[in-house]
Image (cartoon, rainbow, N blue to C red; front, side, top):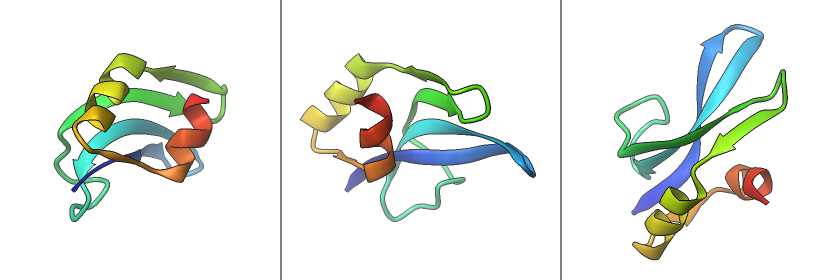
Length: 72
């Protein structure tokens, strides 16, 4: 099953997150199927490609709770 979730990047106490599509059995830092956007909690900057997210959901991908909150 494909999941749309956050992957943590950056340094200690300076994290930012990518919104990725990934096989649900893989780690968040492992190989992903596509990068759909990013979120920087320090600057509250969010850039998400909603068309790509909708396309993955149409294919059966499950969106995590954190990503649902961000894209609303």
